[in-house]
Each structure stands twice: as C-alpha cells, then as structure tokens.
Image (cartoon, rainbow, N blue to C red; front, top):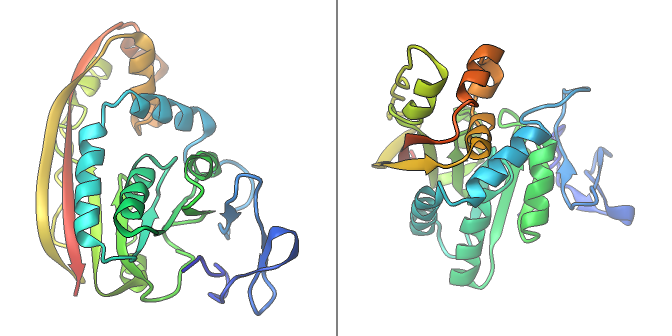
Length: 271
C-alpha cells in the first residue's frame, strides 16, 4: 500500500532517479529525507506550520508533557488495527504519535504498513527522518493521495476534519481515531495570555457516516519551569498566530506556568 497520484489517482511507480510516475505521466521527485511532495494547487510560500513552530513542538513534546496521551493513542490504535492492517495518520506533523503507533504495530506484527502526511514540508522533513518505515508525503487533508477503500485505520490528532475524504479512503467497517482539545485544554496558558480567558467550545461527537465506538476524556496538569518551555508550548498552539505582541510579551515575562491539558479521544467505525 502506498500513496497514489494526487492529480489523477493513478498508481505511482518508482522509476529511475527516485522519481515516481503514474500511468498518465505525472511525476514526483523523492526528497533527500525520503518523502514525496504530493501537494497540488498550492504555489509559493509556507503551508502549514513553519520551521519555528515545528521545532518548538518537537522540543515541547520531547519533554514528555503529552506522553500519557501518546500512550493512550497507541493502546487504542493497536486495538482498532487488524494484523498487518494499513494505518493512515492525517496531519501527522513531525510524527510524535505516528512513530509510536508504527513501532507498536511493528513489534506486534513483525511488519507495518503506515502512511503519514502533513501540509507542512518542515514537519514532514522531521517525520521522515524520525522513522524510515513510515511512507511520508506532503499533502492536504482535503485531497488525500490514496485510493478509495484502502485504509484500515485513519488517525486524526489535532488536525482539521475532512470527513468525506476520510470516509472515501477507509475500507468498509474500518476504524477512525480522532483526538481534539477538550473544554479546559490549556486554560492556564490562556489565563497567562488574555485578560479574559475562555474555555474551548465542545466538539460534537456525532459524525455522519460513522458509529461512535468509544469516547475517552483524558486530563491532567503540567508544570513548565522556564520561559523557554512556556515559549515552546505557546509556539505550537494556534494562539501564536493570533496573539498581539503585548499579550505575547506578557506571557513570556513568566518563568513558570501550570496549566491543565485536556483531550477527547474518540473511536469510530465507518458505517
């Protein structure tokens, strides 16, 4: 199982000079890190998280703050994936969850078939270096370069939901694992940024085309002991895009911070 042509949907075949081509003739070069850029309809600029945000997230996650979530994701992914099943991580970032799931599948089955993509080239570079067994690509969640009914488990962790594309790529009765922030996620961080912090709007759990299998809430408190750790957390959130310079400086004047992290982990079956 591998990615297909994002333009015509044809099978990509590896030829000379690490170039993949489809039967129609569309071609894609392999990067030195090992991924293929299958993002179409985008020109120029940076798409998705930039290098600074990717590095900040990598540093923050390496400190283990989200390890309980990663362990739960691995546990659920293993329970939902048939032996030697195909797993797709949508909007995988630099691969924090992808890598852990792939290694668990490889240990269980003696092999794995994991694909992952993100719209950010900087993130996919990191992912490709992290685990060479994962097939990686730069691509959009709204134009997934995979054939219909080809995936046993799709994972979506803190990424935009393109429901129709997920339904299209999943096999009949295949599974879907989604993680999103719960109401109190990072409330302590928002309290340090804004004069009037707010809770996250609850996400609906009902999803057309799917049956809900499980709904797990996971929350705990984390403590950050330096301004640099606070900056890492801030830079990996959407608040980095929309916070004024005044509120940013206000946040980074702190040298310690405690905040709740709260997640919802939902498992579905395709109807």
